[in-house]
Picture 1: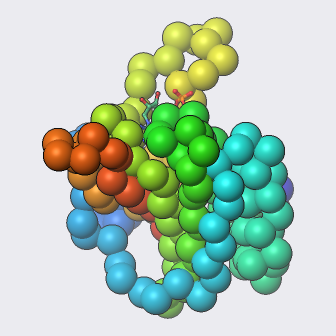
Picture 2 (picture 1 turned 30 degrees about the vertical axis):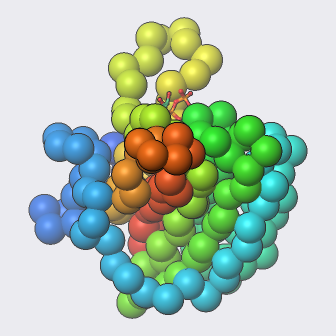
Length: 169
Ligand SMILES: Nc1ncnc2c1ncn2[C@@H]1O[C@H](COP(=O)(O)OP(=O)(O)O)[C@@H](O)[C@H]1O
Ligand SMILES: [Mg+2]
């Protein structure tokens, strides 16, 4: 991360009205902005495609001061899509990027799973369980939408989306 890209801050909400939603309560399932995506691309559900997604975000947000954080968090969400959803079983994930006033919103849509994103309490030396902690620390807001359940009748997972917003001033 480029420390000059934005002021250093701890894992605290930026202000009382735009706090990190995953900290004290479950992340919002529906309150994110609905701005049409300016950039949208689908990737095969293979671990090597996470690097492609990083390059996509880097290019799309080249002029945004928050590009480093966006690339890092997008990488974590893309990795989760491949690791924790049906995306990694021959599916795909999609990355969409949109801008609002002073904000950038990035979503990663996967092929769904029986679970949903949840911040885990990682042990000090654990090598996993930190992706959503990073999202929660760096994003102004984040959350997820979608059923997070396998369809009862079809047995197939239904798509779900994890999103975050960063300040881009
Ligand atoms: N896209 C997703 N679909 C379903 N579950 C997810 C998804 N992303 C994250 N999770 C759940 O949230 C947990 C925490 O994710 P994360 O903090 O990235 O740690 P890790 O991926 O190392 O387990 C995962 O272990 C998984 O159970
Ligand atoms: Mg992860």
